[in-house]
Length: 109
Image (cartoon, rainbow, N blue to C red; front, side):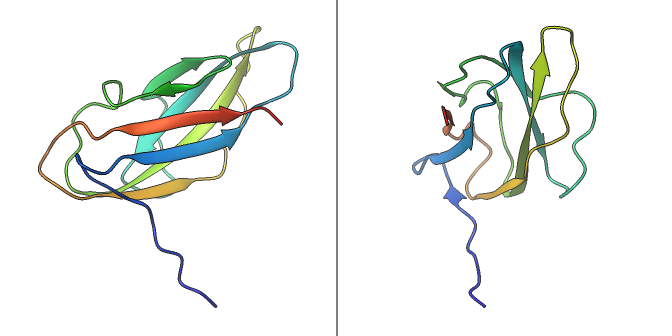
């Protein structure tokens, strides 16, 4: 099998995370979780993204230390129900502590 290389981010090299939009009519927002431990995201989202949800989140993600990070998303409906976590996207942040540019894009199916 092929070894999948994780996207490398640095202050000089942005990363892009893309996911497919939910199609529910009552979708309210997405919640982005950022963790350094695969499969463990905590209960507090790092970022709340209103629909349709296209944004560059260099400020919102804050200062990152060098290392590997895992991002997942959940969808929240108007009643406040939160979905399960999306598939995990991993990236490596390489550089001095800084706010890397991570562009988060929703593609409408």
